[in-house]
Amino acid sequence: RMEDGRALDTALVAALLGTGSPELRARAAVAAGRIRDRHATTMLVAALEDPHPTVRRSAAFALGELGDSAEYVIAALADLAVGPDALVAAEAVAAMGQVGIAAAQPALELLLGSERTLPHVRHAALLAAWRLPRSETLTAAVQRWAQHADAETRWRAHYSLQRIGGPAVVQTLLAGVDDDLERARRHHAADPEEEGDQRQGGREYHKLTREFRIPVHGLQSFRAARLIRPTGPFNPLE
Image (cartoon, rainbow, N blue to C red; front, side, top):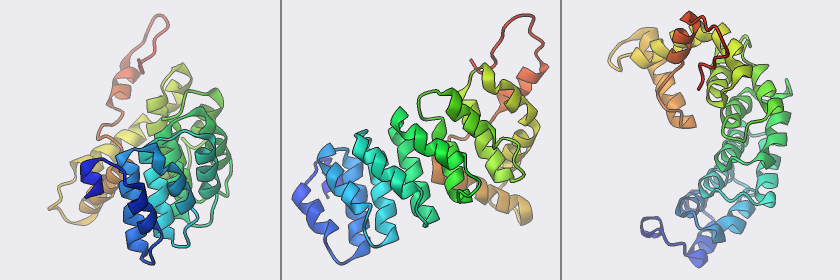
């Protein structure tokens, strides 16, 4: 297979992306992205306009894997991120996070600054924000969601702020540390064989870590930080 050999066959990818099967088109896009040959960039950007949402989502994922930071790539992903399909838009946002350049910042700030952003897309934007270069305005855009009524939103905001780090986020994280630690502990400790809410919590947590590539660690350092009474400047994030 092309992906196993890590060698891009542009003619084959072009042919597969032109087939009548959405499944084949989606698989071709993902394979091209994972090879990480930027000769595939133009084809993958074009696939963002495929009529089938699965193909568009796969093309966005592939561009994130490819990591091409060209201006037109970010612009295409940003356009897709404000589209009506939440799953496709969220994948476009995640791809911008994977590429991780400052050019994606305006798109993420726009999404995080609007109450009208679809929840699934907002969640993706919160988890993508920490991957971009540090920015006061982007950090502030994440912080506004740290006290949101929705626990799923708070969790992601706190996680992103933890990864962003710096003195500006410490008080926000400390204010929500008990909330996050309880949720992380409950989900991580859930035994797959247990029944009821705890088992469901475990499934949700593992789905979250898998879908958004979140490493399985929480905010335990901040519980310790709450017990520290520094006499001088101290940043528990460093």
